[in-house]
Length: 179
Figure 1 (cartoon, helix red, strand yellow):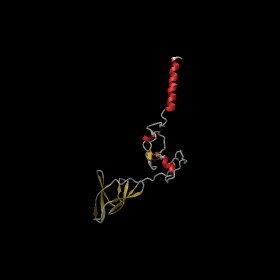
Figure 2 (figure 1 turned 90 degrees about the vertical axis):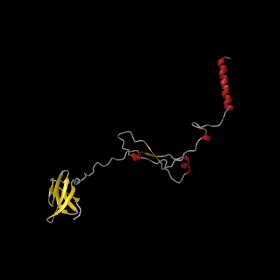
Figure 3 (figure 1 turned 180 degrees about the vertical axis):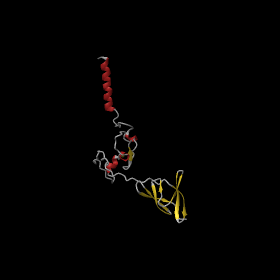
Figure 4 (figure 1 turned 120 degrees about the horizontal axis):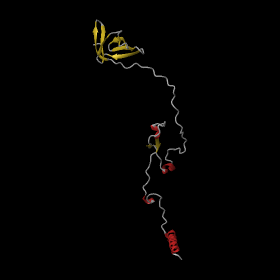
């Protein structure tokens, strides 16, 4: 016999001895043997695991839709812990319908009053109010027009009523009591 046959027969005999007399305890595919493995960590069904935001710019997914429910332990599913989970519920992967393009146009609104109340005075039975815009000061009486944008309708403390002329919208300015 050649040397090669002697090596092959020796290896065959060693492998046969291991099959007959070797260790027959099963081992897991990954990690430690079963007696040393840690118990599984319980997971609550209401926990949410957030996923990273979508990377595509055309995605219509909302941030609150990107949460995934955590997995339940097998024992919880098999024992029927009182909560019903539909494992095979149907889900729609279609994107939500686009919003209606026919929205009514917003009504134009008068800008906020640009005037600052500086003071008031009762002159010959008629009130005068002093208003300021930047460096300008206006002395205002009923019926006056300011900057061709505002008309003074009524001047009865504690309220000065104005009308924004381009939109004909009334506005009020608090000027304090009649003291």
